[in-house]
Length: 441
Image (cartoon, rainbow, N blue to C red; front, side, top):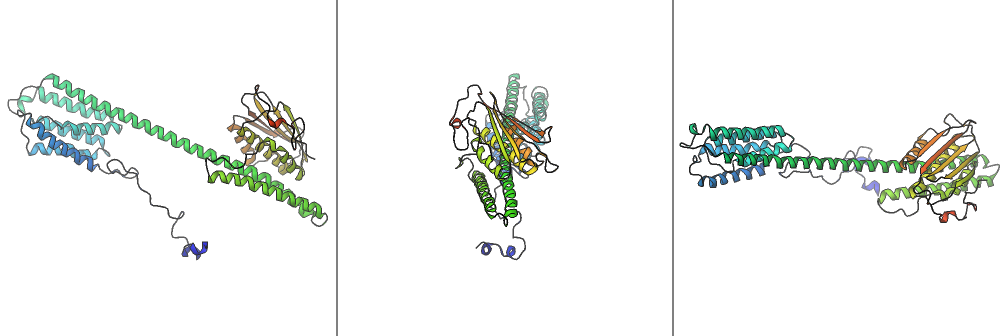
């Protein structure tokens, strides 16, 4: 069925009609409030500029009726008003040009003696756009130019400019205009600061999301490595035993095959658990994560690979947090796997120490190494260190004086002195009365 559904070009060995994966649903581009493309080139804000132009033209006509002493609106006045609004089409790409141009048009309009009114609105919009874009000094300079020019026209040049017979403007009017300009710039500054804060918060959220994805990816990689490395090492050893004894000792070869079946089944189960977590994120796993209560299984698997594990426990046992319990199990699992793979020793010692504020794990073999990479040289030690560091703990790994190799992990525990005894303290399958895992054969 899959071959019938595959594209014809793919069945004949050619590339599929798409590249980089099958085609998905069409993506919409994010657009701004004026229809500008947020991801590509910024489009001029035609809609808002046209609406502002209509408002300024109509509002100025109404304002002119209340100011009969000002010069009548003529073609030049209409051109200046339209120009003051039209340059705002550049406010997204070139905010400095827009704010200076609209301020200049407004200054020419006032210098010609035309009525006061909405002519200041385009200046406010241009100043707002420049401040939000980060051009604060330029916005202040443009507004200051308009205010100083108005002072010059209204108090010194009024007798030489239209309308005829015009008197000096009251100084209280200048204070109102200055307050208006300061208010516009202050609001623009507030919006700019808020936008920068939103941008920082968004960047922080994206960085946190990327960090969580990276941490989850590393966690899954560690889980898969620990499960597969341990199980495949056991399977490899038992496969060699089975092949060697297939003719001379069929019963022992059967035992090796049984061990391979058991190890592969366990590995498949743990890999399935990891994959279920990927397919249904946020849901609780169907089976509990492994912990130190499963150490007898590790001892048994190591014994089936020819490694005798002698274990000891010191201190008062206590209930471990799930993360610490899982990390301790994986560290011991990886340390024993490294002994099987990289050491010629057939005996290892596992020590578990419950200190007031920490759990101390130690796995040591007598050596010598079976190759040049004693203790392992791949990602196993790196994974152990990452697990310990994620809990605030440490890993100390290195050769010992007698030629062996030792891995020591220290994982912090909360509330050490007040720890209570748990059901894990009771004797059970694979545990002695003292709570220690049974020694391997």
